[in-house]
Length: 262
Length: 179
Image (tube, each protein chain N blue to C red):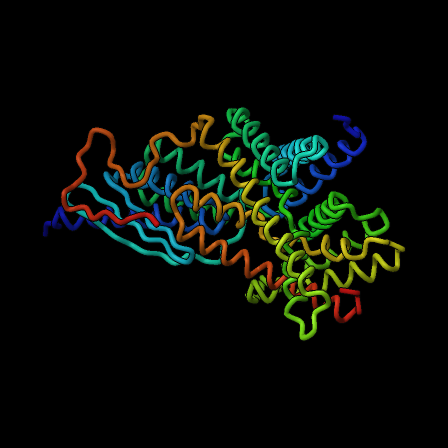
C-alpha cells in the first residue's frame, strides 16, 4: 500500500507548525516581547523546512500558518500565564538560531524543546526570596527611605515573595495574590519600620510591595506597540494597570487597618 | 554642575543591587547577574547625573535607558542573545512604582465620601499618574531607540510573513495579519 505523498507532506508540515508554535508559546510565557517571538518562531519554521510563515500573537493564544509547496497548515495554541524566565527564553532562542543555521527535523526540535523546558533550572525559592528582599530594600533606599526601615522592608518583602510563590503554585488568581501580598508585606513593613524607629513609614510600605510591580510586562507592552503589535501591547497594558490597582488596594487596606494617616 | 559623588555612588550601588535582585526573580543565570548589576548601576548613575544637571525625572530616565540600551548593543558580541533582557533588567529599578502606588491611592482618596481638599488631591493624583506614564514611556523609548538604531545580529533573516529569499510563496498560502 502506497501512502499519498501529499498526505505525508501535510503531516510533516503539521509537525513543523507544532514545533514552531511550541517555541512561540514558551517564549511568550517566559516574558519575551512579540517581535522576538515572531522572529524566532519564523526562524524555527523555516529551519524545519517551511517556505512561508505567518504568526498571529494574542495575549492568550497564538496562531500560525506555515506553507510549503501547495500545502498550507494553520494551527492555534493557548498561551498559559505570562511570567518572566529569561534563562528558558535564552535557551529557546539559542535553539532557534541553531535550527535556523544548521536545520533539524521537527521531531528533534520538539524533543530539544521538551528537554529545555524540563532541564532549565530555576533559582531555589529561598534564594529568590532573599534576592527580592535585597532588591526591595535597595529600591527603598533609591526612593529615599531611611536606614532604620532597611531590614524591616527586606524581611517583609522576603515573606511577601514566599507567600506569593506558595499561592501561585496553588493556582491562585494573580490579581488576588497581588492584593493579598501587598496587604501582608506593607503591613509587616509598616509595623517593623515603626518598631525600628523609622521616620519614612510610607516609603517603607511602598518599597516592600515593589516586587509586585509588573515592570517587565509594562516595558514589553510598550515594545509591542512600538513594534506593530498594538493588540497584544494594549492587552499587556490593561493587565499592568489592573495589577497596579490590586497592589494599591492591598496597601490601602493595610493603611486603613493600621490607621496610617492618608 | 556640581556632582555629589557620594550620592552618585549610593544610587549606582543600590541600583545595581536592585537590578541583580530582580535578575534572580527573572531567572537570569548566575554569570549574567553581574551584567544585571552593571546595567542597573549604569542606569541609576546616568539618571542621577541627569537629575543633578537639572533635568526632569522623565528626561533623566530616558537618557539612562538609552545609555543602558546602547551599552548593551555595543557589548552584544559578549552578551549574546540576552542583550535586550539585561538592558530591561537594568532599567527595572527606574520603574516608578512609588508614583504608581501614590497615584492610585490618590484616586481612591478622591473617591471617598467626603474627601479633604478634592482639588489638591485630584491634582496630586493626576500628577503622579502622568509621571508614571511619562517615565515608563521614557524608559521604553530610550531602550527602543538603542535597539532599533544600533545594529543587532539577532535580527538576521527572521522576519515573519516573508518567504525564503529567492523562493516563490505558494499561491495557495493564506496571509494572516500579525496583530
